[in-house]
Length: 148
Image 1: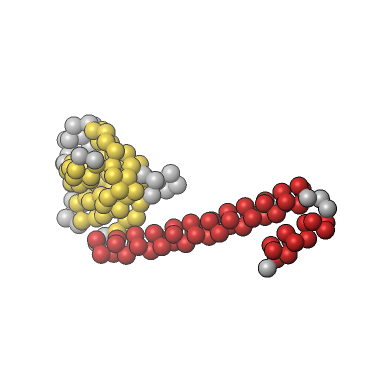
Image 2: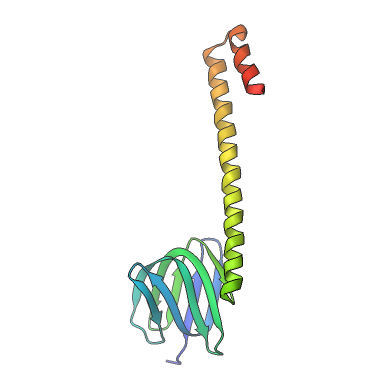
């Protein structure tokens, strides 16, 4: 055993991190924070939304904010994290800014989706009213309300 870990962090759509020169990993599950060093026993746990930290052989610290996920250690060397989403950074300050930007984008996308959902719902209600009241004289007030 050469004293390093092979770390892989993936999402359903991409590989965020793939590194062979990791000497230590720190993560967090429901029971708290824990560390992994080369030669660790096999492990399977569920991560809570947190910051995963690791140190490379040259001493550099790296970080990845994850939305929770599955953390595994196999053969004392292979560390894998499968998560729904993550943001990688070289410093905590940089990572915090990236996470804020990602969250803002997600909130805006959610807002747009809600607006579209409400628009489609209103359209469906108007169609139902037109279907249930086929007489144009009765349907006219409903159309005027929808247009204003």
